[in-house]
Length: 219
Image 1 (cartoon, rainbow, N blue to C red):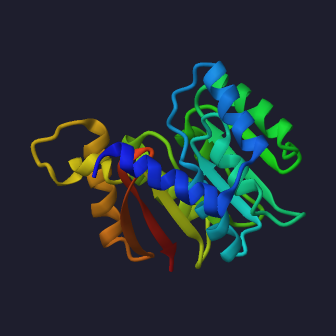
Image 2 (cartoon, one colour; image 1 turned 45 degrees about the horizontal axis):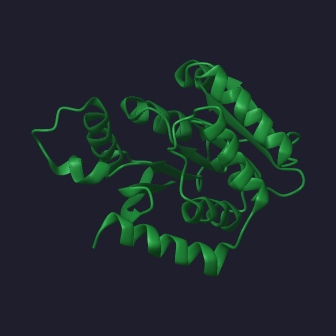
C-alpha cells in the first residue's frame, strides 16, 4: 500500500465517523497561514484523544507541546464544565496562534497556555489537583523527563499518551543516530522498567505517514 492509500483510508474514516468541523478546519487554516509546521495530530487521532480523555473521566488535563492548538481543542472538548487544561509551548508565535484558535473555538476559559521550555514550566507546577490525563507531543529528546513529570503531577490511574514513538520504523534501526530516535528509544527503556507505569504502544499508518503512540497508565 502507498501513502496515498493510507490517506484515502483516513479520509474515509473521517467522513464516516467524524464529519466536518468548521472550528477545527479554521484552526488548521490559521496554522498554515502563519507558516506553522503541518505536524498536528490527524483528525482521527485527535478524536481518539478526546474519547480517551472522556473515558478516563478527566477533569484536569496536561498537554506538553501546543503547536497551534489543534490537539488542544480536541482535548479541551473532553472536559466537563468545571474542567481545566494546561498546555505548554516553547515557541511564542505558536502560542499566539494557538490562543487565536482556542478563542475561536470558545475554549479560552478552559485552557491556559504557558510559554517557555517545558522542563522549566513543569518544574514550576505544583497543582492543587493532580492531572488525570497527559498528552506529550514535544521534543523527543525530552520524552523521559516529560513522562517523569507526568507521573509526579498525576495520580494512580492517570493516563499518559506520548505521540510519534515509531518514527517510520527508525526505532529498530540501531544505526540511526537521529537524536529524536535515540530519545524515543530511551523512552521505551525507561517506561519498560518504571515500577509505576503499565504501558503499550501502537504503530499506525495514515495521512501523517508511518508512526504511532505510546499509551501508559500510572500505577
